Image 1: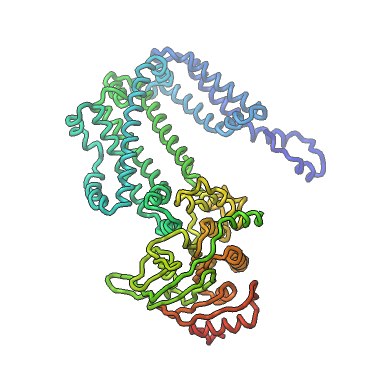
Image 2: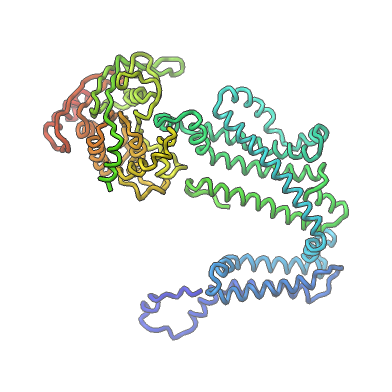
Amino acid sequence: MSTYSLSDGLASGAPRLSRAPLLAIWIRDSGVGVLASIAWIAFGLSCLWWEDVGDWSRTHSLGIAAFVIAAIALFGTVGVDYLGAAGQALHKRAPWLVALGAFLTVWEVATAKFAWLPLPFFPPPQAIIEVYTDDLPKLLDSVFASVKLQLGGYLIGATIGFLTGISIGWSRAVGYWVHPVLRFIGPLPATAWLPIAFFTFPSSWSASTFLIALATGFPVTVLTWSGVASVTNAYYDVARTLGARPSFLVLKVAIPAALPHVFVGLFMGLGASFAVLVVAEMIGVKAGLGWYLQWAQGWAAYANMYAALIVMSLLCSGAITLLFSIRERLLVWQKGTVKW
Amino acid sequence: MVAAALAEIATHPAAGAALDIEQVSHAFDIDGAELPVLSDVSISVEPGEFVALLGPSGCGKSTLLRLVAGLDKPKAGRLREDEERIRSPHPSRVVVFQDPTLFPWRSVWDNVALGLEAQGILRSQRHRVDAALDLVGLSSFRKAYPHQLSGGMAQRVALARALVNDPKILILDEPLGKLDSLTRITMQAELVSLWQRKGFTTLLVTHDAEEALVLANRVIVFSDRPARVKADIRVDRPYPRHRGDPYLADLRRQILGLLGLDATW
């Protein structure tokens, strides 16, 4: 990518004869990309140079993969002008590629090659790769079970919380009855209900769904309610003078005005429900990533635990990203919204 | 474009309505104590008149407007629009508030469409929204969001949102109060020409004597709280009026005298 502009040349009054500035520009633009490539070559070499201290089947493939990534980084850097958006994306992430390559190299050397970190507890990268390739069906089953449970509970909780929040905010009578209940039960961590839920509900699945819905519902209710309560009367006055009926005031004034608050509640609920999900899966549900973690620990399969943790964090982060993009879509009218 | 917009709106003639305010008194309950804000106010407004309500700030003018709009009910007295009791808000009486109070989650077009949507007639009357936007000269901003507009533009959108309903009585609660002086003068001229072309009855609350005199047929001066009618002044001058008109300057001196500010003049 050349940022060399015409005016530079004109301002200097003479054609540039020295090649030094060009080199400087090239290093500035492409140096990080080349460095990224070097970092990944180092990782690849660290995999292949020494013998493993343990017995891992994917060391060789991992080394090759590292070289492939190094090659992509190098070609992407050299050919950035021809690659369009993909090239730009790579360019932007080059510093992270350097950091990642360096981290993986250190990790590889410290575990698989010289065992500076105690071994069963700190598996090398190839051990985790091995989990993904060899234990994939079980891991996928767990992911599917977790997503199903989480999604069901979250949607139920968010819907009920939203409707409850609107009703409390809108109707004095509903507020009178629901508010004290909310104050009494709401702050209780949903996990405190675990023992009771697991013997009162017909199945562990329904018990967990209930708990996830509970964890989600409380923040969503409170924030939806506060959102509705904080809508200024001026909006209602305007709508009323224009002929709005009560249903219009709720659907077209109160709800859209409260939506930014609702999303804060949805985010808080999401965080809380992740915690409940994992705990419920570790204790009662015989499926899902929480259960997989527990199971892996039972077998002292530490690589599986790390592998499951990585998947779990990807899922949680993906869920938050999804919620953010929905919010961005619905709240385009807000300026300067927080980016994820 | 404006001509086309006017032709469009002319197909929905909105002549002004008469407004009768009869012995209206009102009070607020503040911590159990009753705070009187309006005391025995009677005003009779002819169809198509432009009446300015002038008074010290906090005297209760805006309260009177809320009663006319039907947003609040008076403690005593009656308000009638064309002989019919005012009991609740109705789109034939539309208010433009001091703050534009546009809905920030709606685009300019959707804000203007609000009244028609609330009445459930938007689907067949979409052209009226376009016409109202043309009328205030903001057609090219139809997709903008309120936070992208300047204060004057936002107030214009609020005006379009009111006018799209073809009100018989347009209620203006210091709509130009927060605008800079240049925008204000432009908007005053626009208000007069809109009123002249469409013929609605206009009620304008202001605390600016000059604004009242440049715009209105009739200026009603209120006393301090609780507001009583102190003077009812006809302003028989043709439009467009000149700020420097000696007749208006004289009236202004009188009005400021009524408001207890004669010492400064």
